[in-house]
Amino acid sequence: MTDPTRDPGHRNPLAERIDSDPESVEQGLASLVLTIIELLRQLMERQALRRVDEGDLTDEQVERIGLTLMKLEERMEELREHFGLDPEDLNIDLGPLGPLLGDS
Image 1 (cartoon, helix red, strand yellow):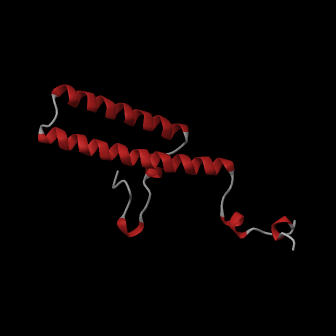
Image 2 (cartoon, rainbow, N blue to C red):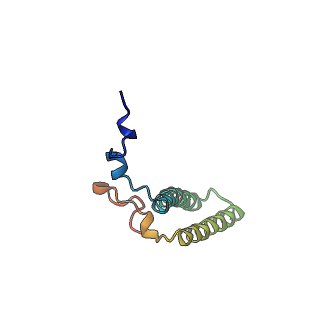
Image 3 (cartoon, rainbow, N blue to C red):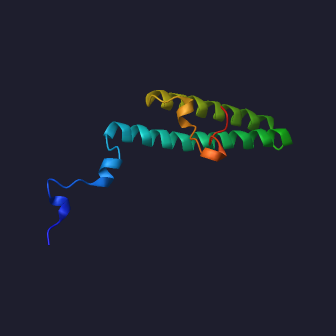
């Protein structure tokens, strides 16, 4: 029995559906990873604001968290620029649930 995938005339339906261009794969992966990082950044920011509002943090902790979040946001902007992505590119549409990152 011969392997049909070795036949030069054989067409792989999966390969036809997947865009395997290395540049688009890199772009898609970068977009996915940066989306996850942005989601975590926003969650950390909300948690920090909640703790500040509750008075759980010292002034030094508030300042350190603020600086850390600002640096993280700057790095995210640098990475988006490096990969040619806009902030909207990271906001995955979840259909009836709405956008993943909310209205930015």
